[in-house]
Length: 121
Image (cartoon, rainbow, N blue to C red):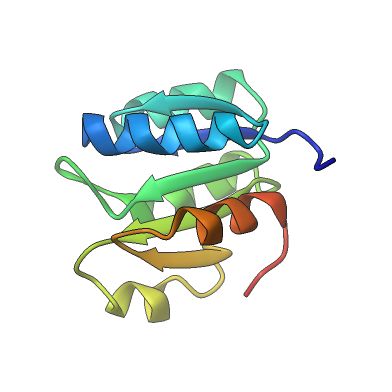
């Protein structure tokens, strides 16, 4: 059996966030969802997470900037960035994220990234 991970999903698309949360929980992990970068920072300051999954575009905020901020608060969680339109984010993500996934996200690839916490690709 896989170890249970605590996952924070940062996604402003309610339906997509709910689908991610359901898949993560179905795999046996604990999952919290926030819809803004500010809420994500507050969650990280108040809780311990094994993985952070963030969209690149969170309303007016930038997921890459958010993951950098989170890294300065707690460098331990695996950081996964999702984007639907920015393959350039892969180059910019070096040293900030462990995995970059293009939308539509393959849920098995996402879960593999969560379950391989701390391993950079």
